[in-house]
Image (cartoon, rainbow, N blue to C red; front, side, top):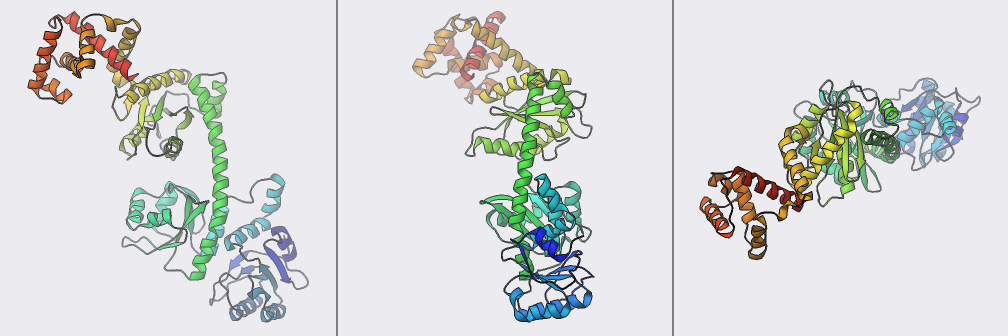
Length: 517
């Protein structure tokens, strides 16, 4: 247990200064927030914070109420804390007066005092870590604003929440249960322009009640260095006083520091996880230990390769956003790593509690812009994960060149294109392009600007169907027929011979793959 002097010493002179302390020194109890012009509800030994107490009359009244109720101390900010009438009142009420340094956020003070009373500050100093976690900070902010609070990241995922969440509405309950604001709730706030204000502003936003029973919100963006780190959402019964809103806003810098600390810890954990996932993908020494550390279940998995296409946004930022989107709660939170320009996700193949089916549905249904290239290896045992990764890499190469155009390319679904791709690659290595009449068409296309190779390829793909072949080339069927006639005049080739057709198709595929490789 701490007395007032010891508490002030532990929290630190940078924040608190004892103006008056009665003898014997009083033992400190809990922290209570005093409402201006409202009856004080302090109990014996409580520390009463005069949030919003801005004049001498209010301060004197608060001190007298605290004395009658046996409070241990009143905490006020200057200049009220230095007024002679206030000092005289605390002497008469036998209550300690502690001055709170200007610029101190009330939530920070609540947080630190409670940590000190619980021994948290000393433990933190000895261990070199922060004095509390985001949940304790959420409780402190809730005390300041006198309303239940959630602290959320920039993607509306709940990182922490305060007590008293029973005094809310169904939207808040759904948010807490799902650790993220539901899509329908987000849509309502977007429609009201709340997120637009969050993105651009830096002050508290009041959102009135909605017709569906959603209670009012006081929302505060959390920024550091201009970057939006997240936001705080307080469920309030109605418009709040200017003093209370200001006190709520004053907590933002403290929350920003904690969010940065939380993100730094998360980044360290993510880097460690990414290193272990890379061992699994490569099949390198230590992959078994990595699988054990990551708690990879002994069941079949798939490797998903994801590459963001070129856009105005920095590639690193796009990959980070995709990484966070994938791991924000899809299925069993896929294991993700980054190698070069490609993100790799490792997921169980089955849908028990999430896995590849759930991730696939999310990738297909989510409005991702720009749409990424997604290639998926076959389902394999944990021991064969490098093989699934190699398959995903092969498909990513085909997606880059445009030879495959599916939004999600799955290896076993595209076996026919893979056969053609490998056959074309082998043909290129064997130098088959120089054989037969194709070289004549190639030179004619280069010199005259014709498109006879593509015409021949379309004919081989759709023999006897000039309408479908013309549709593929986006030309009229008569134009297609004319081109085929000109090809017959340029080269002697028996297109009725199935072996000739097969050979030409291999050559054309090899050239096409070489051009896009």
